[in-house]
Amino acid sequence: MNYLTLPSMKRTPERHLTSRLRYPWLIGSLAAIALLSAACGSSASSPTTTKVTPTGSGTTAKAVKLASATLPSVGSVLTGPNGMTLYYFTTDSPSSTTCTGQCAVVWPPLEVPAGSTPTLTSNISGMVATISRPDGTTQVTYKGHPLYYYQGDTAPGTDKGQGVDGTWFVLSTSNSTPASSPTTTSPSGGGGGVGF
Image 1 (cartoon, rainbow, N blue to C red):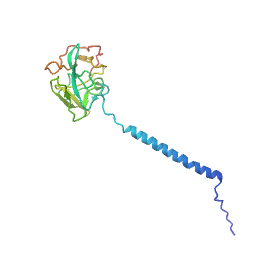
Image 2: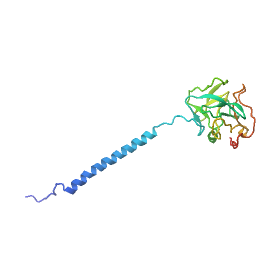
Image 3: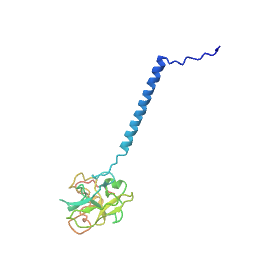
Image 4: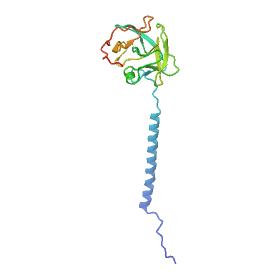
């Protein structure tokens, strides 16, 4: 005689339908999580390699070839690989720079990957080399001057940084002197006098 009655183990249609619907929902959720993780991982691993415009903290290029351009107010000057005018800062030394932080935002340094050798076009004489910046990046120098762009120059052929604060000047390529002699104490072309 069996005094204990167990509940029936048969599945009711409602119970069978609920268990069937639960698993596809779980599988769908896991698939969505996996897709989202893969998308985040692929976007994070896409490197940005070079900057070719004078914005941000510096301008980096894999192969840097310096050229020259003739500007009406200052003559023949050194230009970067993007055609923009290059400047030097009178407080720098041949082996170090004093333009860092916010200064390097207004005056982005011309940088190259470590171990790169910048070159000059055949019509330019003088020595081109590199120095190590305080942040570990490598900056190009010409005739012993670390090189910079000026944020106020918006197109090739401009020299709005010339003479800013009496400490920023273009680099002349038309003579054998290290750099152009200061010709003004205020920026030409309305550079705004922003310097450091």
